[in-house]
Length: 364
Image 1 (cartoon, rainbow, N blue to C red):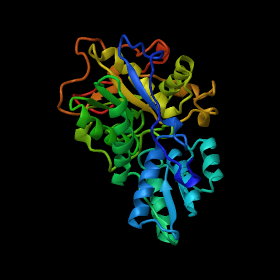
Image 2 (cartoon, one colour):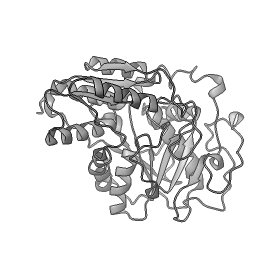
Image 3 (cartoon, one colour):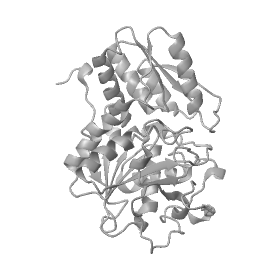
Image 4 (cartoon, one colour):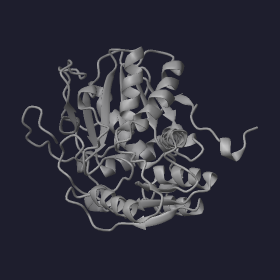
């Protein structure tokens, strides 16, 4: 039996998404990160960063944790701070799901809400500036800084990356993962490439994010994308990026629930939508491994609400407008396959956005 202070994270199930993605086309395997104790992959990040800071003496009984978060990391830190008996302040923005706010507060976390959008069209710069203010004014304040802390990617190198290496029944040809701080993607890429040097690393980003040079804009799916480039990102280690819209993410979440019986959060839908676009363009014999970052119960009033999002945001993009190679390695897509159509039958073509004119290598 474990005491409450010894609750562990990790060792989540690896499952085949064989009803949503027929394995005779391209098999897809996913780690169910919503089954971590706090409900998301950010449990791994939070527990590793805090344990390392405790061991180094950066966090003591007199500390006050402060962190910028879109929701899940704040939940994990609030839970840990409660067990450690230290205060925690979460700097959040209006995109925070109401259920996530309730969870942070249920664990005793304090909410500091910013409402002014930043120069990138999001809230991340504003949140970080507010964290800087709080660190200067709160006695004993400690900011672990998930955006630049190398213990972020190390958490996933030693955690989910190691587990995938141990558990995959076949060799994966692509690892596909959502980005925000980029810690999860970098940890996965580094550990999986040690085992499978030729594996292709595909980042999934939300339209409106600037991480890979896109134009900043309104994003309503929390926990994915950013209005600044995170320090964790090592661009040469990423082969490609594929984008999805809020609406595509929403449709894919609902499809995942219908086909697999898995109720996952919005960023999981973004990943599923990206994979649906990618699969028709992969070579025969490909195999994808991915992760579903968090639970869907927290998004019942958004992603799973039939009236969400607003009609003007119910837009999709075809593969050609969503995919971009980043590295120098050979293309991961089949050059002979047309990429102008919609990805899947469950993405309605009536709302497909036109393919923009792009220069070679240009951002979406």
